Length: 434
Image (cartoon, rainbow, N blue to C red; front, side, top):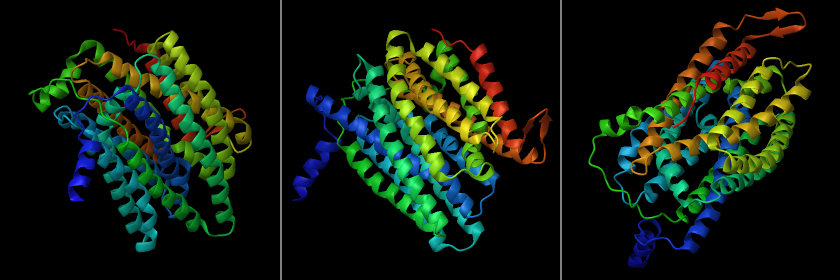
């Protein structure tokens, strides 16, 4: 029995045979499903539901903004993990374990108020759990992205990635609508914690399913040569690459600007505008429907033009959306929130798809994981500092209001304007060309 289990284990995680065409196709189907489970976990443990949960526990807006920035801090390990992944012949087991540790642990924060009763202790433990989870996420991301890209078809990759994103958006939209209504029901009946418990327990169950799906995806043989270069050489190589350095610089500015205020969108909707979870979920559904249609068009557009064109086009829409958020108030929220959230959903998906493919395409065949890791690490760490500065700025500008005719802008809206200004500046001044 032990020998049989050992053989199955080695076949799953340490298979040295070249994947057949049928195995590639099965892997691509499971890759689509694993994208769905990963996004479902993200829906349940981040964004609006996380903001609601932390607000229920008595967390301040600054604390919530810092929590929102932690994922970017974890990405610092992306600078170092490629040193390990590039030297491994079989990476699958390590990737599956790290993904499970990340996605399972974020769901465990629901147990904190049941175990600890002091507010300060609860918030400290949640901060620790989130930090651990996103350190694991940051470590595994370069290997995971490279593995996923090696499974996707070379021809028609834009179409495949569009289908993958559409599947995720459909599942997330349906789940968001049902969970939003459920949470409003428990909130009205003064059983808020029960609603959040259901949400995070569901995330724990899905994380187990996600691990099983990832384990079922084949791993292509690593035909790249194992380099004996030092960690410093591996990190400095993409930084010395003149045309690739432009990619790093642009994405660093971009993620700094985005994370300067992105956490405050959910905070603004839940705490300032006091929108119901049902309304926010309906907006999310509409956004995902638009995303399902647009992402396919974005992918086809990228195949016909270029990833650079897709990056710039979607980036302009994102910048305009942040500018628009600065003028959302209680009186116009029911009209403007759907407009900006729907446009952001469709454009963010296109921008992220383009950013990954530009990194993948511009990186060399040998050591590509290191290029991806260093780029994402630098970009997301600057994003973390953007989030921290945004949290500090929100507190500093707390009592400031800008009045102009019928327009009244508070501290969070000022953050949206700053983000928009930086995004437009980046798009206008940075040229990513070989």
